[in-house]
Image 1 (cartoon, one colour):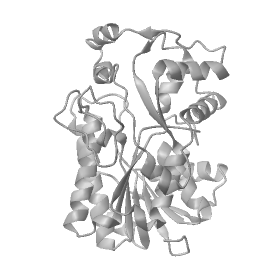
Image 2 (image 1 turned 180 degrees about the vertical axis):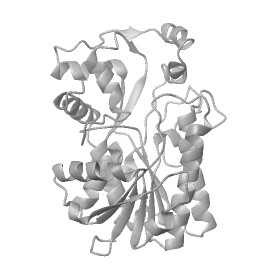
Image 3 (image 1 turned 135 degrees about the vertical axis):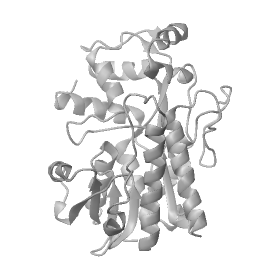
Image 4 (image 1 turned 90 degrees about the vertical axis):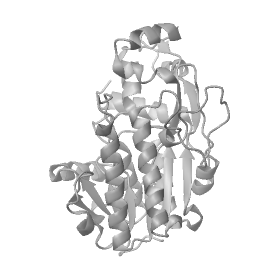
Length: 342
């Protein structure tokens, strides 16, 4: 579908880090954008942020939607030809009850997709995650994870967040299969998303860079990060609207997998005055600390277990290579420092 005056996209989660970049890419591409926020008082801030980034916000309007409420979904879809469902719960601290993450992720997906189907949209694009692909598998696995693979929910050390993304995406495919419209759904499955901030909210992924720059990580656990640039992820969402070959497919996105210690090294090259970790932390020390910290405990499964993604489908969709992990990392750092956040 080419952009035009009647090509309005409903974008859920527009106030988030990725949602803002998707909105920016959509507006630059000529689409009309209807963004959903939980509270309308966020709308003006989003409008100012996108205008400051160079977007034509005359083609932007807002609706209030809640992942856990039926109110407003059908009205929000009126006049929209595409649903881009980016909203998803992501709590910085692991909840005591996993359903605090799983329930809104799954029910929000159900509400969004069912409303879109009732409205007869042409295409639905779901922001899923590497979390729905690459976890719960045997530790001996070294091959890259591709679009046909799913996180094993019965596997070792699967976190509530990984469960929420897996169950939400599986539910999306179930809904589309039941409607006989599987080929009208596209799932984008990014890894850790970094890149330039559009506002003063560092979000969740940028917190890793923020902590490194602040000197609060004296030694680096042996954890690898698969990184993708937010601008590539946003571009993939926009490309998926009009690409016939994208229908019915999943698109893993990860430019490179690098250790946390290597991430610190990349930052040190540009910021030599920062107190960045130079040494690794033994796995046994992390496991010991995890006995007293639930959030650390949830990430113990990542110790000495790097994962890579097969991003060839996303590269083909974009028609170019992905921006490097270093590119995304340094853009994040520059934004944090420019905004006084590190």
